[in-house]
Image 1 (spheres, helix red, strand yellow):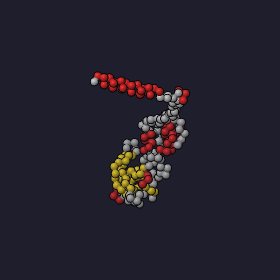
Image 2 (cartoon, rainbow, N blue to C red):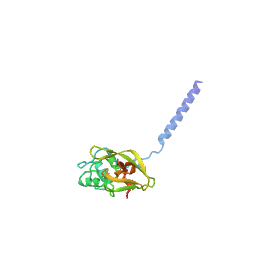
Image 3 (cartoon, rainbow, N blue to C red):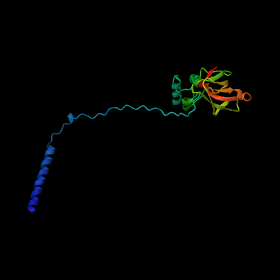
Length: 196
């Protein structure tokens, strides 16, 4: 039995030697024929700067936030808040300083605003909701809660104040038969009324 095991070992050893010889004899590719591996140059990815939407922008401010504001205003975007930017902001929003967040929510100036003393009526077919008015200490007004709705064509009253720099709302004094002794003031959106 010992001879059989030895015989298997010899045959197995010869088989492994033949396999190794075959692998070593395989044709190898000469170094001259191997193409070099090249890497493609990568294009740098442009990054957009992070903007601080809460930064107050005013004359003298500089940076990417100012450039963004200038782009929104349609003026030369050089990143310096100067006289041109200030004038464009005043013309568009009615203010001289603003944040990018406030720019998006502040209404544009109403260039066709009605003047104080003009009588107005409800100009929406589904009616015009008005708010009460809160009188402030510095002789200005602020909108209060919902007060009532006027039907289309109904007189609301006379404008007593253009309530904000953008001229997008009015304070209107109503003096109907039931308020003849104590006039009532309402806060109304400029777009919801028409001149009588």
